[in-house]
Amino acid sequence: MFIESNCPVSFEYEIREVKAHPDIKVTPMVGDILGNTKTEIQFTYNPATFTTADAEFEIRTSEFDF
Image (cartoon, rainbow, N blue to C red):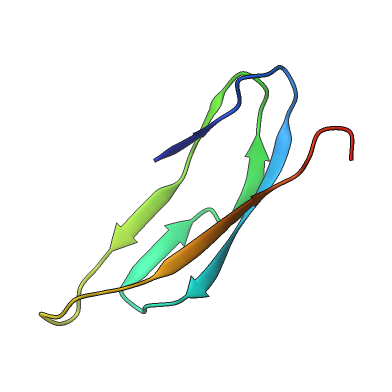
């Protein structure tokens, strides 16, 4: 998955686990989205059992000139 900036300004982002699951990981959890570029976010699912995995994440970005 990619987070993309369509303007020449860089933004910070933070990903928070709202509902965690031990089989689902996201990296990196914090970083920068550089202006006019894409930043890759990796979601990794490594199942330990034959069950349904459910997780929730929240993505927060900084605001321009804030």
